[in-house]
Image (cartoon, rainbow, N blue to C red; front, side, top):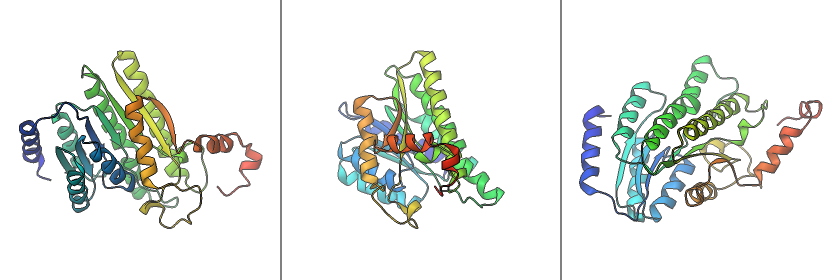
Length: 267
């Protein structure tokens, strides 16, 4: 990945190009996912200054090029495998080197195998919970030191609302991430800083992660979810958001279903 030299080259490049006053600085971690790519398109069209992080270097390069064509003025990118601790430490340095971050979105995730091995589950926890939480803490601390604060968005899932046999381990990680997002809101509130923390819960999304699932009316396109996320910045909304919004009612009904009924379902 080039380590410290790569970070320095990237930062030097950014300092020369500068930032226009009508742009927002947006850091997106997970830019090569289906929702991530949709977010890049939406944010780039608005002319924002983007910092992009993605797992696959070749795919990330394509996303960067597309963003440039759509109007982003400055783009810095970094390919990172969040299952690699060394890579994550370098990513932390890269984030710290950015002078200011107004908005940040963290959305990496892998769908866990309910019958996976201990090694597989350990790696999943790294990608779905440990590293996103660590990066969220890093970014919230950075935003807390900024006079204008910032808006941090973590992407979870409706799967974290109740333990279900079909995706219990994946849902557990998303549920844990939601609790940590709440802890960050509490921490930033005590500091009385201008930092907002939102936690977005998409329902079923058409993506490589759900490629094997039969599609129905409950599925949303990545562009729909991206539009919902981007709207949070203009509304300045903090807290928990379902995407689409009607998932709040669906999950409320599932959470309120008595165990003697719920345990007879195959959800």
